[in-house]
Image (cartoon, rainbow, N blue to C red; front, side):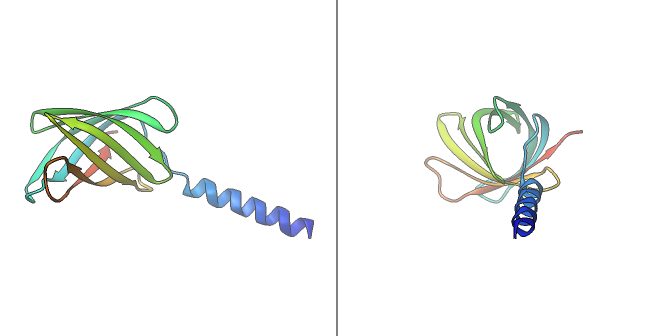
Length: 120
């Protein structure tokens, strides 16, 4: 019985390690769609503050915005300021390190999409 419990614990630990996601500090390319469906691109830089929190800065179409971000499992969220508006983006952290997200901004209907790809 002890062998079964030990084997189950090891299997659970291995599965947790495989499912653990991370977001790397550094520069990313940005590809996204605006609320009206038009596309945009640019860059982003993530600076880690801890294992789960960070600062993210975007430069898209010459417009800069800064946000605070947090990692929770395979979800990565950021609240940001863009001009006079507040925004929120929630990304899924993929196994290849890309971040795929949906975003919204105060005072606007709908949501846009965004993908961050780490620059190597």
